Amino acid sequence: MELFERTTSCGLVNSSHLNKTIHLSGWVNRRRDHGGLLFIDLRDRGGIMQIVFNPEFDKEAHKAAHALRSEFVISVTGTVIERTKETINSDMPTGKWELQVTSLTIHSASKTPPFAVDEAEKIDEELRLKYRYIDLRRPKMHNNIKLRHNIIFAIREFLNNEEFYEIETPILTKNTPEGAREFLVPSRIHPGNFYAMPQSPQLYKQLLMASGMEKYFQVARCFRDEDLRADRQPEFTQLDLEMSFVKEDDIISTVERFLHHIFKKLFKIEIELPFPRMKYDEAFSSYGSDKPDLRFGLKIRECTKLFENTELKFLQPVLKKGGKIGGIHVSNCPFSRSELNTWTEKAQKMGAKGLLWIRFKKDGSIDSPVAKFLPETFKEQAGKIFHNVGTDSVLFLIAGQYEDAWPLLGRLRLALANALDIIPKDVFNFSWIVEFPMFEYNKDEKRWDAMHHPFTSPQDGWEKLEPGQMKAKAYDVILNGVELGGGSIRIHDSEKQQKVFGLLGLTKEQVQKKFGFLLEAQTLGFPPHGGLGLGLDRLVMLLAGEKTIREVMAFPKTQRMYDLMMQAPSAVEPDQLQDYGLRLLPKKK
Figure 1 (cartoon, rainbow, N blue to C red):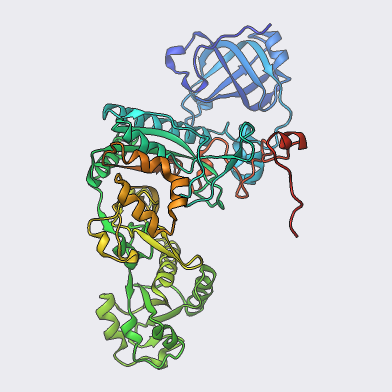
Figure 2: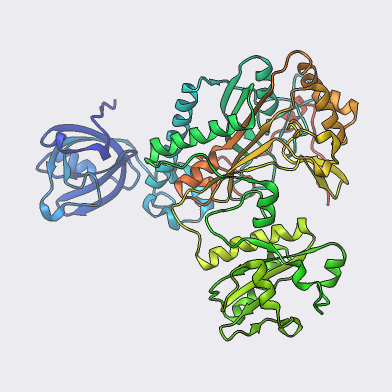
C-alpha cells in the first residue's frame, strides 16, 4: 500500500524549509547519474526541485532510485539543504537548495515518452496533440492554462460585483438559421428529429431578459461546424453577457471596465479608457477590414482619379464598370526592384488579379513597369492624396470593385507591415468598430444576409432606407487587429422583428417554424436589451503571446477537425445507428 503525504510544491521550496524534513511529489524531469550520487530534477505544476539520492542518506532509496527514468511519478521524503556556491542554479527559483532523499515511493513507471517534455517546442504539432497530456506537462503550456483560469476568475469576480447572474443555458437546442453551420444531434426518443448544438446562447440569453434577469453572463461553450483556422475551433469558449434597459454605451462601458480590471489585476497594466471608436465605413475604407490593426499606419487611400486620364488600358475596363483603385504608400522603402516584382506574386496568392507598384527614386525619377504612361505631374498629384510622398518611397496599387479590392489591400497592408517589421511588440491596442451595415448582399444566393444576426436592431430611420443603406446598432471590440467579440442592441418588438425577417427573405411560415417562440415572447413583455459575446480563447491567445488558440486550449482539434488523442470522430456500430433511425449512404463519387 502506498503511503505518502505532500508538504509543498516542488517549485515553492524556499529558505523556510532549510534543514527540515519535507515530502514532495511529482514527475522525473531529468536524471543525472554521477557514480555514487543520483540527481533527479523533480517537476510538478509549481516548478522544479533538485533531489539527491546518496547511499549515505538511505541505501534502500538510493538502490530503488536507479530504476527512475523520465516521467516516472514519485513521492520522496528528505531534508532540505543548501547547495554549494559552485552548484547554485540561479535560473531556478529553487536553485539554492536540494533535497537529501531518505525515502522513495514510485507511484507509476513510464515507458520512454514519444518526446521529451523540455524539447516539445521542436516536435511536430500533430504528435503533441496525440499525446496532449504529455504536452500539457510543459511549463509553458501549464502557464497558458493557468493564465486562462486567472482571466476567467477575474471576469467572474468583476461581473459578480456588477450584480450579474451567471446562468447556464442548454447545449441541446433548436436548429435555427443564425449564420454558421450547426452540429446536429439525432434524437432517439423523437425519431427523425434533431437537436442542434448552439453557435452561441443568443436566443436563450434574450429570453433570459424576457424573464426579468436583467444582467446575465456565462462562460459558454459554443459549437460551429466550419472550416478551421488559427483562431477558430469547432468548439470554443465565449464570455456571453446580456443586459436589459441599456443602450450601446452601457454595454461598451461594461466591457471596457472588465478588460481594464483583467489587465490591472493580472498584469499591473492600466489600459486607457475609453477605447477609441471608429465607424465601420471608415475602418473599411482606410484599412480594408472591419478589425483593423491600429498599431501602425499604412492607411489605404483611394486614388482612382490619378489614373482616370492615363493610357493604362488594363485599368480602363475596371473603371468603366464602376471599380476603384486603392493604394498604400510606403516611405523609405527598402525593397529592391526584384523584391517589388515578387510582391505582385504575393498579392496574387492573396486573391488579387494583379498589383501595380510605383517607386519615387532619390533622383526624382519614377521607376515602375508603367512609368512611361504616367504624366510628368504624377508625383505632385500623388502627393495631394498620400500627403508625404518623398524620395525612395513606393505606391502599391490594386484595382477592382470596392468590396473586393479593399479587403485585398487590407491583407497586403498587414503583409507589408510584417515584412517591414513595423508592428510594435508588447502593445495592446484596443478599439471599437461601430455602425456596421445591417445587411450584406449574398451574390450567390441573390439575397440579403444579416451582417451580425437577424436579432440585431437597426438604427433609427431604417424604414426609409434600402437594405444596403441600413446601419445596425452593432459594435465589435478589437485588440491588435483581432476581433475579440461583438454584440448589438437586440430587437424587442415583434413587428420590427418580423419586418427584418422579411428583408432576409424568410416567409411567414419559415419564421413561425424557426422563431415562433421568440415572436410570442416579444408580445408578452420584452424589455429593451443588448449584449455581447467575447472569444475567451482569442483573448487568452493574445495575452499569452501565442499565434493560435490551440496553444491555450487544453484539448483542441487539428485543422481537419480531428481529435488525434481520442481518435474522434469515429465510426459507430450499425445497431447504434438503428436506435436513432439512421443508416449510412454510400459515399458519393
